Length: 290
Ligand code: NAP
Image 1 (spheres, rainbow, N blue to C red):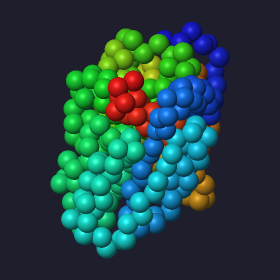
Image 2 (image 1 turned 135 degrees about the horizontal axis):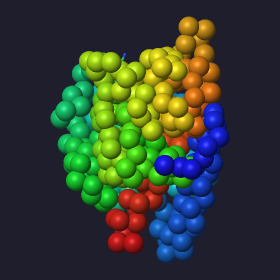
Image 3 (image 1 turned 180 degrees about the vertical axis):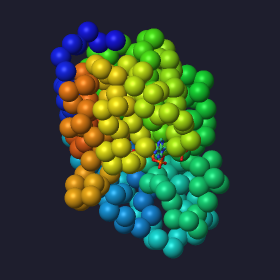
């Protein structure tokens, strides 16, 4: 564990994102000397506000780093066949190194079929099950999803020793809970996964050295869920009764008890586009035998 003894430290995502970006700028610069420019393609169906907000952040981040981008905007009523055709075109495009497909897809498109169609070597946000299995196998050649990776990177940046740490993950979704649990296990933590059927939740979470909350319930985690001096990573992005953005953790209620906690907004969410960019650069290097 970290030897930080102060209480209530808010650990922001920005310095983590900035450090990742700084390193990527150097890597992209080196690649450019050999005439190689990494490229990200984003596939978006329709124009959901959440997707557009994430897209703006991703495009800006890539631009800062020197990664080329292309957005493929598809009609809301696109057929499954046409969607797959668009993905195949990007798979075959040698200039494109990474593909981000916004999900969930509209209901008439079958994700369970489509997820196998994206080239796993370009699947920089872990849609294809091959990349999910690489997390289980601790095979570093794959691309774990960006948000769970951001959680691990934040903990590492703030010098938290994960080896042997008792970590409780709240949530078991394929988007956050399960992959982050496996990534933390791969860092030699002892991981407990909780979900909506878990009994005596506060009893379990209040034993955690590190608590990762990914439940999607505004301010659910209160003081009684927290061990004295725990580190809390709040992945949740919710809107509270007053219409304000908030996490899964009631920060004001737990601040005196935690040693460190990520804010919402400004925490995990602000690191994800840097991870996305790092996956594009990694894919570019692997595809160019670098
Ligand atoms: P999700 O698919 O709805 O999964 C929520 C998980 O929490 C489920 O496993 C569910 O259990 C569990 N859960 C729900 N209520 C619970 C309760 N009262 N007690 C214990 N467990 C409970 O959500 P998600 O996609 O994982 O996202 C979780 C949160 O992270 C959301 O707020 C989302 O907006 C946010 N998020 C943030 C980022 C970011 O970049 N920061 C990215 C992705 C998601 P069951 O499995 O039993 O139903």
